[in-house]
Image (cartoon, rainbow, N blue to C red; front, side, top):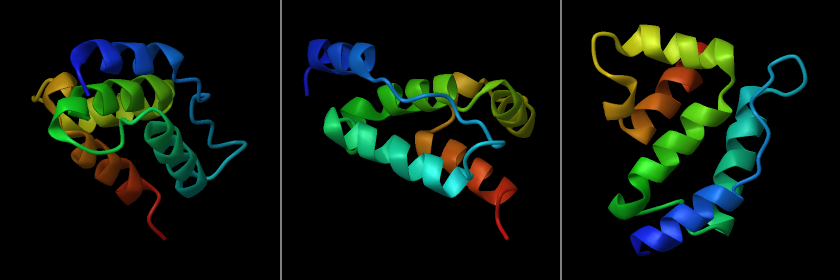
Amino acid sequence: MNPEQVALAQQRFSLDSFDPSSEEWAYHIERFECELAVFGLRDGAATEPARRALLLSKVGKQHFRLLVDHFKPRAIQDVAYDELKAAINANYAP
């Protein structure tokens, strides 16, 4: 996927933000990753920045803060998508 295609996919990505009062995290992340797949963003190093940016923009205020605090002093934009996802998964682990 070239940079223009990635940018277009990011613009068209339309999943709502995570709201724990209406949906469990496990279901939300599954829907999120289905949406990534629809736009060809699910795999590959070239789409890693897009996955990270979309996840950060769709986790909601509370979970964005949780991630920023969890990874301090690292800049949140430097944390890999899989690390971000694992941190939220751990927060909701049974």
